[in-house]
Image (tube, rainbow, N blue to C red):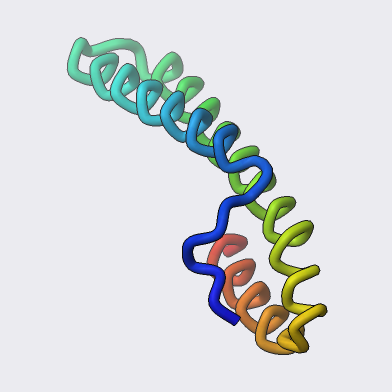
Length: 93
């Protein structure tokens, strides 16, 4: 099962979210360089983490809606589940 170049329903949303996160990280980096208060910086880092987590949820939703269906139809669901478990184990530590 090779899905390396496939497009998901939420791909544009994921790319847009990651672009916003990227900008947010740059802004927080500047906050640190400017000597802003630690609690203020930590609050912004928490917002970045939340944004990353929400992006990951969207990627997982796409994966389950698209790749799982494909894997079941192609008979590769065991490999799919193994790779999903490995990815989740690395993400949720």
